[in-house]
Image (cartoon, rainbow over all chains, first blue to last red; front, top):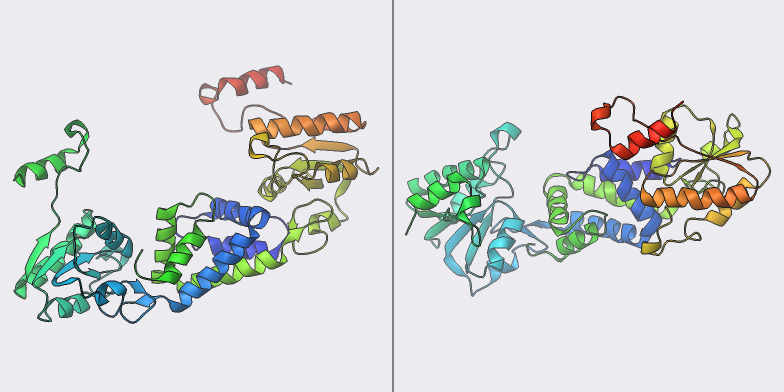
Length: 196
Length: 196
């Protein structure tokens, strides 16, 4: 697009973002250069800063700027409960409910044999060490309810049960605010079996 | 998301990209930090470089790293024809056809009263000066066939005709490879009127 090597390089670099193809990348580059150069510089600095400073919490594996994240350091947290989630975004969703005051372990992914992601890539050994350290009494599996998330939960659950820990899974059921007519049959079937 | 100020700043900066909301921005930040830090640094450098060096060609207004772009400098180009497009991406689309060997004027936008974009914002005076400079004999309006693109073409066309120039518009009609059954009625009506 146009006669500019630095523009071409920008379009190529924007394509490294997930879900961004050549058309979106061109549109983004056009917008930044034509209407928001300040935004471009701000994004440049934020990328450089984050790529240099963000690391993983040594306890729970989530993104943090420090050695240990604020959640793991919080003395108000109930250290006997450990909630296992796939990503920081999932952790954030659980946090927003205010219904959980225990600690977390963030897998930073899920088991995905087709993509070559095995137990080592999502730090399962670290999770097992943490869970069997003596403090944790209950591990709550909050991976996603997708095929890969379920498989990940199954693998972790079996391994932890074998180590004598109490393992629970988020309840499956009808989402709040939904009408039965529009809920898929698998969900209704699960909600029937798990009725209380 | 998570306990990191630099991550939070990155998510906010990514939201400056067009079409990127908070969920997409979080997903992009997660991907870059977890799987592609090299890509993050590359994008950071490309943004900084482009925001600092890319400017507008003094002749045709497109993006370039130099004073005048390569297309405007090309002596093989037919300087009597001037094709008016909205963006560098549109210019690139016309170029790829290899059906046009004249010069360009890139508006870098379109008239859009609702967004407060008037003739001054898209450099119409510069276009009029260029078109009436003596060399240009025909101005080909290749703005998009949207409401705003048509309005822009109309305004430019009227102004240039008043200055005694020959003004043409890209032909409207049935797209190559399409079946009439699936072409919208407005397009078929135009194709009938403009039949040849």
